[in-house]
Image (cartoon, rainbow over the protein chains, first blue to last red):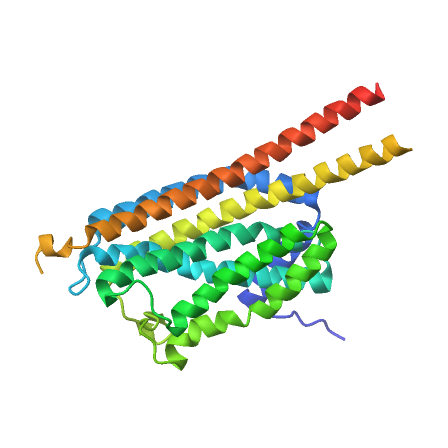
Length: 262
Length: 54
């Protein structure tokens, strides 16, 4: 029978490549080598994009006809809020990888992302609150979007508490992974809270049906979002490297204690 | 709205940017220092093991 070449979509090819990269990085030594090589480039890119983003936000973006220059708060609030959710989605995916495939770096990735996601979510809540006072007349309302974001922040704190409370890495990883996967139900609640409930928070401005933000405001917003996303990748890789090293140190210390007891 | 009116809530804007700057800088420093600390510990343990063997 004649062999027919299979036609694969670009998405399928990208997923295959991504899967190959994840399998390649399953070895911690390879991960350390790979991350050491790409980190300087990522750090430089993150710094450049953030500086350019701040320049656009402060010196180029016009003021909004209703909000005035208070719209500048959105250039940091929106990236913080979206990253707070994206980091949690990453933690949930890594937790599934840890629970089902026992990928050696999955729980390292999930644990390392926790403090970063917690800080981003906290900053989203505080900057939103500081924007709310002059615009809504109040720092806080028990609105569906605000409350579900607060729940996300508590989920981060809960997951960090589990890692701190349980000494055994595999037990802590399993417990945290289960909570992370269950807690992922909060993500669609946050996303659709403005649609499902009568919310004070405005609905999404970037939708598949169209964008309702003017380019002059959208450009600095996207540049800032890209800058903070790159910063997250840098911080996450660094935190993962620290965690891999910490586990090596602990294993060496344990071997020394065992040798001394013999 | 005049340019002056547009800056009416400048204190809130500056507070947001300062807060984000301080928290992100502190997080970055903490993560970078943690990695350096673990590297140092690993080097020290490696050196001690080498001495014990020799």
